[in-house]
Amino acid sequence: MEPHLVVTYTNSLPPGLYWRNPIPASGAHRGDIVIACVPDRFAAIGFARGFLEAGLCNGVEPVLKRVAARAGDSVELAAAGVRVNLTLLPGSGAVASDGFGRTIPHVAYRRYRLSPGEYWLTTPKPNGFDSRYFGIVRDVRAVAFPLVTFDV
Image 1 (cartoon, rainbow, N blue to C red):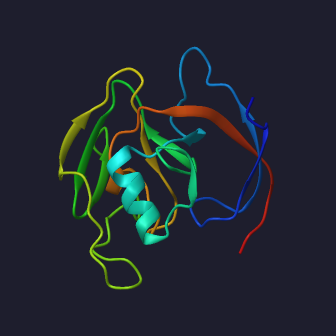
Image 2 (image 1 turned 135 degrees about the horizontal axis):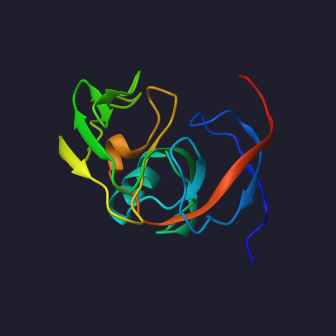
């Protein structure tokens, strides 16, 4: 059994304590914070770059991200940013390189239509490691609710 209390200290979401709940039968909704596993190829990249630590999700720790899109939604990924159902998400343009000047690979720029069980995850931080880079996520483990968070 996985713990219900989750601690995060990354810059993807405000650092703090989050409570873990099962995914509802209807799935996670837009705006929910979820605990998910990054797809294999990008888990390895995230680990090699120091974006993710070792863990039990494809060899890395699970991530906490916000759901930007779910089944039935259209997501368009372009250099200028991410559009969900034609609405541009502020600050959602992918950066070409990380803080060390290394190119950050990403999924193809194109339009995606999400199927049941698929999610597009985002972070409010312009430099966050999210679906702009690793694309559609199918392995969402839980919904998380902030208990105590800290501005840094």
